[in-house]
Length: 124
Length: 110
Image 1 (cartoon, helix red, strand yellow):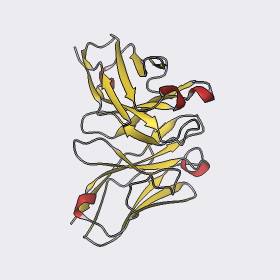
Image 2: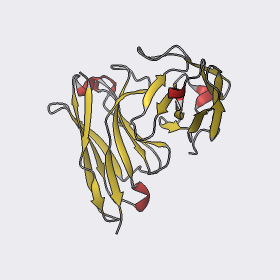
Image 3: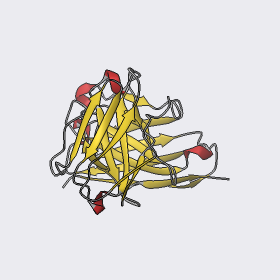
């Protein structure tokens, strides 16, 4: 069964860092593009960034709101995708979802499956 | 980059058909075939309904269909059912090699 489980969320002060993990099972992580998507309380979905599959270079792209502060990486040997979040802002408070691209290798830029999410609260 | 434009709410009666629009620009919806639609029930994880404008993943009801004309994509739900009451989001790949979501549409089944 394909599954994604996020961890690492919590309460953090503005300006501090946090690293989220997404443990994947049921597929080879590096074979797929992986994205992080967040949802602030009571708000809509916001794409955070993605890392392309290894076949497409494993390169990353980010939303303008997090570029330069957030970094996505994967450890294929441990089947874990990471979201390193630095210089956190109050506006980064959200439920963070880890998602996999629908297609193996080439990206359809469509996300399935999704993890259950991990909550990040940025507050002093 | 601003979100794709969706109506805040739509409603319909059981058995009817409704359409949710998703308007962008030539730099996103109009320029690429990578438009997706998601359904999210309260407190639940979003579910992929449509990918690449018109394609349904296996297991998704054929009551859901997608289309695109110019810079506007649309999701049509036919034979509306009570369980369809949820929030719906569109997304698109962009010319900046990023993804963008719509603001979301709340569907009420009367």
